[in-house]
Image 1 (spheres, rainbow, N blue to C red):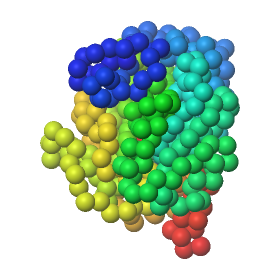
Image 2 (image 1 turned 90 degrees about the vertical axis):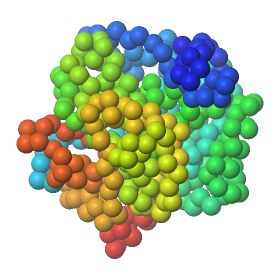
Image 3 (image 1 turned 45 degrees about the horizontal axis):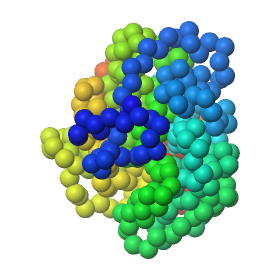
Image 4 (image 1 turned 180 degrees about the vertical axis):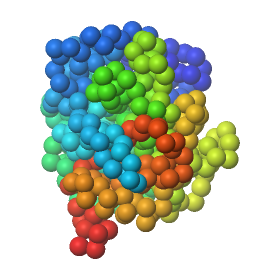
Length: 372
Ligand SMILES: *Cc1c(COP(=O)(O)O)cnc(C)c1O
């Protein structure tokens, strides 16, 4: 069932909806009893955990064999950490995790057109699976978006609609279109998080169904952070792992509303002045699920860290030396891992993190950062 936690109203998953009747966010309420034997012999993709998905999306998976990304050990700040290489997804970022489940739902509901608002990786991922499913796709973007970012979206055959004004104007245009068409929003739609939760399932399976002490993830809209928490919680409730790991959310200092809310103990996300950052993927000034992220991080005993621009460039260089070509936003997460190791980590604490996006997505920017 969909559940609106504000009003406690519930709706069936067969409803083509993305918010409650009162206009609030929806989550999914389901009891998962996951058996680690379940994935044995299943495809080596995130669909091996399909038994933990709501039944409606299991029947017609729209899949490119995505997921089960490599788990490697890398050196950060002279320490070995576990790193999942999610830049290796078909569209070049982990957003494919959520798009494969969300477009599978759209297909199950017989939807003929989806709309979305994103100028970045979520738009690419939704456009990719919509193309595969034979579903028309329209992505709304701010008119100011640089054309380079839109090529991948348009190349899949999606319609790119430029909206004058702010990011909020773009979201409004998408929501208006969503009156008529399926709103495949990575922020609003809870089925997106059913896909991103597989990050946690994969990590634990790759560690022989054990869990590291601490998991460090980006915190913009929280599509990975909130999804991972769902995954860890389901595994804990199924008795597969003993506890949910400590979750640490990384923001850029130039745009750090969650860092501020957490450390000042605020009860809502503050409206702050922000400055552009190299980590544009996590530069979300007013994240819709902001307090959800603060609550989840708090409940695991974790924290939020904020990284400076210079730390992002250092982390990028450090990863490149280890052969990993990553987006600047992804380098910000690694910078957060480095900061966590210097300021918080105990000697024997095991730490896992992620490379969220491929460097090929932003070669010109990386060239500038490295002075090439
Ligand atoms: C979307 C994205 C993030 C951040 O995800 P949020 O959902 O905003 O927290 C980080 N890195 C990359 C490459 C992304 O595409």
